[in-house]
Image (tube, rainbow, N blue to C red; front, side, top):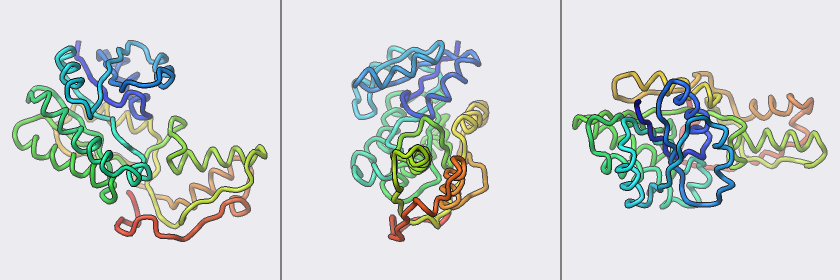
Length: 262
């Protein structure tokens, strides 16, 4: 049975990806960090999943897991995925998103192992820069004969997103305002466009890429919408006019960035 190690098992993407892998007959191992067991409760819903404990920042723990499992495929979904959090912890973002990916490759330096790195279309700020570094290094490993693939994801969302992310913050606020639990929602500028997608569907694309040649792949829906439209649709779902409740401030969030993430 083909063994797959999925890092970042408590995250959104792994939550939707691991059941799909198990359903296809893969032996799935989900890598989690030490911490509050309550974070792992939702993983009990996933059949045929074996949890292993390790951290991208802890070399000995990664070595232990690699020796114990000897995986055929590694899918690295782990990392700091909130751009705002990465701005607050830029060094940690670099170590986790960038150096962490390299550690996995070095520990499991076997050209027969298929390695898939979850990347991003973002290229600026600590988040984008750290993901870009890992992507470039995957290109180098691939040129040296390793089966290293990077999937550059556009934005993809689901109810499993935390409120650190714009999509979840807006949808949760719309629900609370409709219930009288909030009065307003302060946001930054809303003119920027982004490619919005549904996380479970994006994980279907990952399954397809597993059987393709190693390389760079781009997953998105190709139909960017402005942040303002996302807000409008979210409030429309609860029969509210967002303009009555949303306070948008036109400040520059990140001076070096693209106007459309697609």
